[in-house]
Image 1 (cartoon, one colour):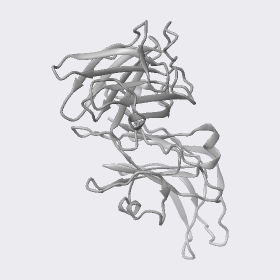
Image 2 (spheres, helix red, strand yellow):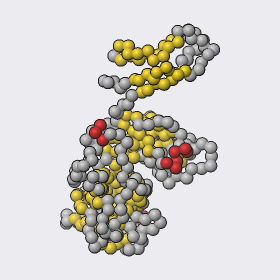
Image 3 (cartoon, one colour):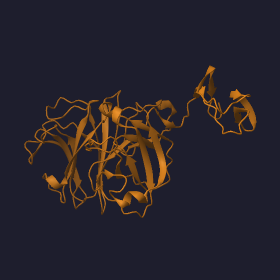
Image 4 (spheres, one colour):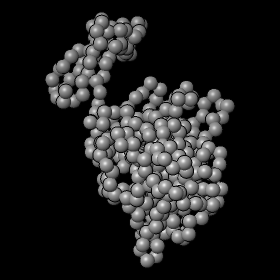
Length: 349
C-alpha cells in the first residue's frame, strides 16, 4: 500500500519499539525508518539508546554491489564519514569505517569505530546493519547529535567501492528524535515510520495543496497502525493548516515528485481513502487514548428543536449529562461554557 501526504509536514505512522536500555542485535526491531532516494531503492532503519549513546543503522539497497552509509557536511562531501560493506561472490563479507578525502576518493579510517551486526545479500538487495557510538575519538567520524543530521547513502553495482553521483543520496533527518508518548505504554515490537514531504519550496499563493506519493515499508505479515501524530518543524508551524494521508491500491502506478493536489496529476485522484488526518491544534491520535475534557458546548437544531441534551452512554448505561437546554430557542445559538469541565474517559477506565 502506498500513501499520499498532503502538505509539507509529516505524521508518525506507528506500525506494529524496542525499549531504551536494551542492546540491539542483528535481528532486533528498529523503531525508525526512511526511504533515502527518489526511486525507493535505498531504505534505512535505525534506533538508538541514550544510556549507552549507541546508534544502530540498517541499510537495505537494491543492489548486489557495495553499500555505504554515513554523515556528510552541509555543502560538500569532502570529510564525510561512510561505513562501507558488501558481500563478495564467494560469500565472504567486507566491512570498514571510511571517510571521503575529496568528492570521489574513499580512505579507510585509522580507528574502526563501527561494529558490524549483520551483512547479507540475495539476488535483489544487500542489507548491512551496524552500530556506532554517538561520539568517537576519530576526527573523521561525525558526531551523532539531536541537530539535523545529513545522512549520506551510496552504493555501487559491483564490489569495488567508488563514489558515483547517480548512486549517492543525502537526506536531512532527525536521527535522535524521541517518541512523544510514554515508552512504557508502547508494545515491545513497535516500529516508527515517517512520511515526509521535503525540499518543497512554498509558493507565494495564499493557499497551496501539495501532494506526493510515499511508500510504506514492505512487510511479510500483518501490522496494525495504532497511532499517528504530527512532527512539526518549528519554522513551518504557522504555514501548515492540515495533513491528510490517503491509501492507494496496491496495483496503482505511482509517479514521483511533488505537485498541486488538484489538477496537476490525475494520478492523485487514484487515492481517495483517508487513513490519517491532522489539523491545526491537533495532537496524537491513537492508543493509548487520553481523556477528553469538555469545557464549552454549542447546542444546535433547526426550527423544530424545543428541548435537547448531550448525554454520555457506555454499554447502554448513562454515565453523565454533559449539557442540556430544556427551553431551547432556535433564534439564540451561542457557545456556552460549562460550570465545571466534563471529563470523558476512554473505554475501560
